[in-house]
Image 1 (cartoon, rainbow, N blue to C red):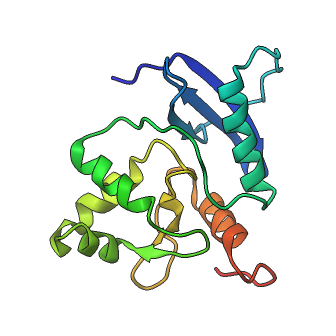
Image 2 (image 1 turned 60 degrees about the vertical axis):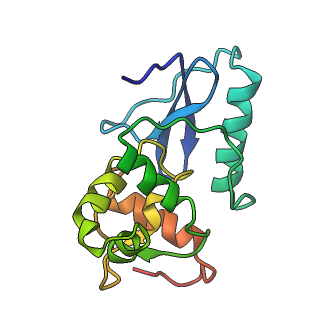
Amino acid sequence: MMNRSHDDYVDTPIGILMLSFNEKFELVSAIFPKDEITLPVANGLGSVKIQRVKKQFEEYFNGTRKTFDIPLSPEGTEFQKKVWTELLNIPYGETTTYQQMANKLGDPKVIRAAASANGKNPISIVIPCHRVIGSDGSLTGYAGGLHRKKWLLEHESPSPQQSLF
């Protein structure tokens, strides 16, 4: 079970992102809550490590950061962790399909399991599950909502003046 010691929030152009950290200040989750929340009033007590993580998210959203340097500790099954590790190999501005993911995992038949693990990714954006699309190029499920997936892919697009979807 997830051992969360510290929670914090980042206000993004697509909603408030809730960050949870373990006792070592490793990021265990970064999620958009299902229900809209109001950003809590900052108390100024955040750890330097948490502030560093928040700064990297802010840099990503303002377009100055393409990769993250954050200690991660997602919790899941071995297979889920294998999928999430594979997601980290998808470069900024690029996409892959669920079928391509399954092939990279060594078995084209694990497409549904890979899609399920992708959907259970607890650390959105840093572990870029939003970069996985349908084989026909369509946007498919995203735990944070398809409107956010669309925004993230357009944000990372090398051709930002045109809409991808």
